[in-house]
Image (cartoon, rainbow, N blue to C red; front, side, top):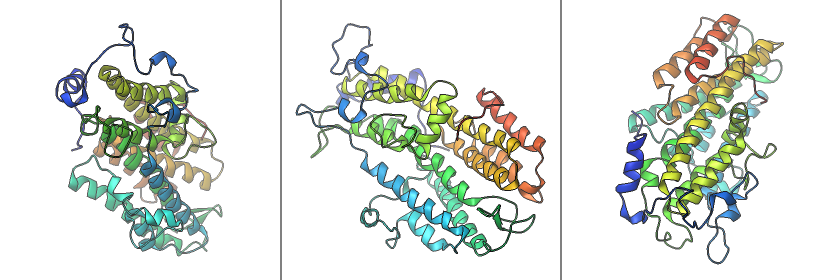
Length: 386
């Protein structure tokens, strides 16, 4: 069971009554209250870093830990990509995941010993469930190390190797590097935003006194850490600067409600914390959670649709592998529509035929796509720019 937040009216009641240390003075934007940060001052061009400042004008925003972990994932991802021409070491990948034995080429990442990808992976799950998900990725590393030994061979049905000269796949055509990078979009970033930092435990904290040695309150900092898992940019979206969840959320939200509105929700929620306006904060939490889940589902559907326009197996299997990663990630949404059991079922429908991807028909892929489209009320023909 995920360690998730109660929803609806009960959430607002909990935030409004359970913790007087937040100095709770709830007000709605049209009540005539003079806010420290007027909501009308926020726009899609607002700078997240400079909108929230202390009396001396210094930014109160800090999310360096999130940026560090994302940079660790970038190094891991880059190393995995070398498997097309060199043998991969499962221990090295596991060391990057668990931050052991100074595995990074960037000395600053090695020095950041308190920042670990694995400890933040599936963190909202129970201890046993989170360990199972972390071991899933360890298994992927072992699979990658094995198939990288065959990168000098052309992949064919039943034979791992290189497909199209550039995609390292197993004997069933699965590109495990994509299961790592796209899977951690959900297991690390989506989970940390929706279930951890915007969850009850992290939001039911002090919002009156600055944290020791800091110029922000604990609640403000937790909100900023959620933002840091979406993007490191001062404004969002930045098409040329976003990576992982930030980039795909931009594409997915643009397909229905617009990425700028997601950014405004982060701005408005942070302003609401400064204003001690917890009703408005809770509304933004609900919006962010729903939009991120819908964005991930949209991208999953889009990748499955891209298999229909693929002109070769390398492109088709690459799109399928990315789609698989996003189907897996959907289990990490808040109060997820996609249960772990259902996520595994849909993944197995795509992966577990006798010859894996080689055996899949267009009808097989469309059946999974249609289930996703129905579950999330998304047009099944949706294709976004990724």
